Image 1: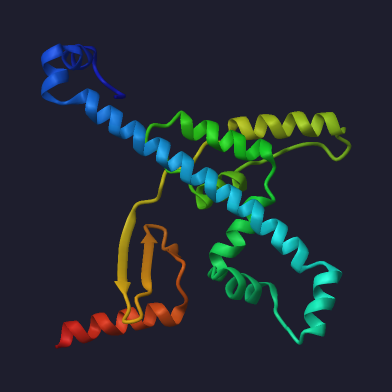
Image 2: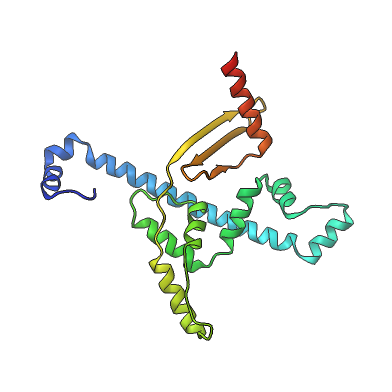
Length: 210
């Protein structure tokens, strides 16, 4: 509860209000949801770490030589798709997240802890990292750079989630889920390829003209 007037706080502190609004149970469930999101984010970061290990081996001379011997010709996008089933966008987000310093990840988690309705996500973490602006002189020492970095991270806030203006979900005949989200800035979020999305749109158009 935030931005409450004193009389509002007093009203909500009354036993009758607490019972009538079921505040204890609502707050308990909200805490469970927050903990679940935190746990899911932790698992996703572990996944990112595993993917980094896999990519490092994929790019190694030993792996490249073995692939050549076996007649395999994959670029990094092929590797993510064929081995793990990841769409290009999500695969590269995992790689970027895995390369962030522990200092940034810890700060992001701490700032999420401070906001009741914060949504932890790889996209949110990457946005947070992009907003960190470290300013140092050209002759700055390592210690000065470290101090400036720590200060920049501390002063960077988590951006508010941009409102969604369009969503679409569809399960195609093969049972594959297609989901698309577009926010108010025109940024589209999806783990599906263009063909999947076009098939979903074609299905929708057929239903509208039937």
